[in-house]
Amino acid sequence: MDEATLQFYRGNAEAYAGREITSRQARLTSFLALLPPGACILELGCGAGGDTAVMLARGFDVRATDGSPEMAAVASKRLGRTVETLLFHDLGEVEAYDAVWANACLLHVPRSELADVLARIWRALKPAGYFFASYKEGDGDGRDTLNRYYNYPSPDWLRATYAEAGSWNSLSIESGEVKGFDDKMASMLFVVARKGG
Image (cartoon, rainbow, N blue to C red; front, side, top):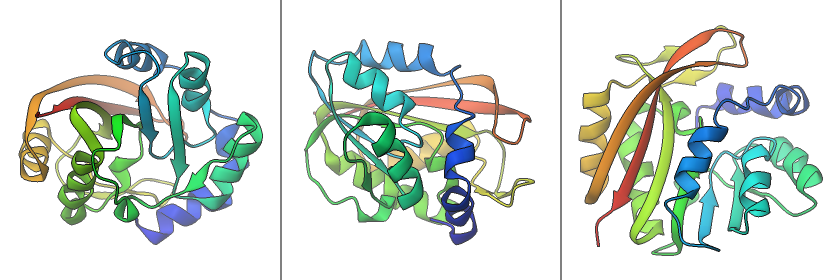
């Protein structure tokens, strides 16, 4: 994880929690519909825990994590349960989860490291497990006005990087516009992949 980006979330956890984006609820609902009742879900970059709350309310077994201890504390307080601090490169489980939900967090992984992180997620998924992630579309990398690092992938680059990380039964990429914490509209890519097996 980029240190300046991590420091942004560590220093702005409460403010970020107060500005939670609800436009992703339809995508979360569609994703959860793919899963069996009570499925075990790993959530990466849970932020203030909004998505976690929805998944728990629908009866899923959720392991919520965030890379920022401060953000994890905010989510823990909101949810009334422990949210772990976990950096992507520390993920080491093998075939432990029916699904992984990574909304607007892997977009901060340096381009050169994304294939490794995706491979860790692939290994952590059970055979035929589902994986959601979202990214800001582009061609290259850089920082936003808040000094957060983004990897800005194109759909073709993402497909190649996912293929490098593991074998997927299916992989779909949809695009859309989302208003971010910086109040700017961004072109997003929403990826749903299913592990082979």
